[in-house]
Image (tube, rainbow over the protein chains, first blue to last red):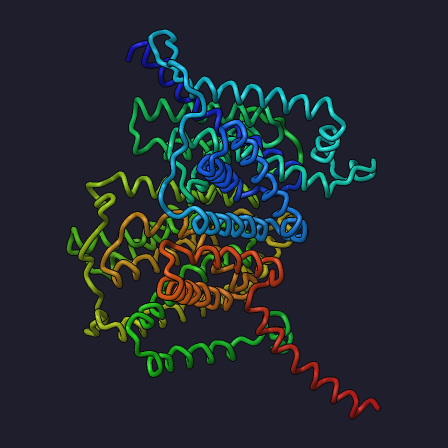
Length: 292
Length: 339
């Protein structure tokens, strides 16, 4: 193996990893505000990608189609939270797992009825010549994904740290009861976290669609990868989730390249099990008493 | 004492006798071969879901990996009977033993996790087993699967006849149900319930909760293995897509829709989901002309609705019905005597 090859794997790993990271941020946001591990997160990516393709099919320019798709998906997230999740808040974890699985199946089915079973493709979002780094090639698509991730991280940082709404959301993540006593409406924070997570899911779906075709059933596997990223990184913070996503992407790229593509998923999930067994708080998570 | 037991666990023999009667009677009414096949599949899957019910409903430990144990059963049986001359029944028992051991080993670390994380870890285990089965082409046939798995015979009874297979599979299911109701009514069953309600409280009483969780996990896994072996011998074919994670999810859905608080919920939920699948598939394909697995929309909808409005599952409708009548009786009795 030469150096250029390693760089190449690193770049493709980080590209895929950025997408996992976005999904993982969505999981972390919902998990911390509501205590729900949302099995339908991957379906948000599907809805985002598919509706973006539809908008473009209707003649929308790219810069209008993407925000519209994100908006549609976050409305779906908001709608689900208001109609179903809110009512089911008192359910046991087992019920909650089954409810969100049911939701993901329902969304997948609706997606299939609306968009059919054939895979659809999205043309690359930006067109530019590939860049060469240390003999490896970085496509404009990869570069675009990195830029999106970094910009979103900055935006999320500003939102969570500098705005009232973001602080309120963070407060209800840290201690819902205390936040409630301070006059924060934790109910609407739950709705907010669902729409935020849906929007993040939509973005990851839209940026993954040009690389692999979008289908109604794309949600399950990328949703699971988002989970794995979240668990590896640690459930209680966004930076951990990002690190987990990038790490998972790089791990996959290298096991794909050097070992075998058949077993690369098996390796990812073995790492998941190892992390769950040995460091259930995640590699970058802080230990807290009453968790997991 | 028997009154107390009935209060605690509900009637024991009444549903069992009703169940046996239903099983014996059904072949006289059902003649369409594909519906008969569904009845047999319900029997096969019920063995898995009853085990999963013990784990998820009684012990409160959710598993999204039971398709993996089903796969071990099906593949051990399939490989042993197509590639060597081992008797199918010996292979079936061997598969159950292997699955029990695998589940025991996996169970020790995995059951330390709770709730969502346990679900995720078992799902991960399922994916790993799925990939191994697809990848180890020399042993498992890879994506092409294993063909020509022979039919079973029992004491000279040829089980390639669907009617014979039907009675044998439901007899097995009845045994598994009987065994499970015995567990539920034993001290172990009470321990499992108390682990469900509060693991910390159970451990405070000096009980090694982890040991019982692993035990019930391995037991329910070997039930899944049994049903996997029977599936392989019934369909004569096993391939990786059958044991994908979506099958694990389906199994959990069957348990939850049926009702996880009663053993009887498992066969009921299995039957509901299997027939729902069949009806929707027929309606959508022959009347609405929609292709693809459209039944998943209705599935998803039914699951969400049942979980929200009938969290105890559809079986709770029966106990409500049962409870409604004594109440009326008591009321009239009170009016007569207490007036």
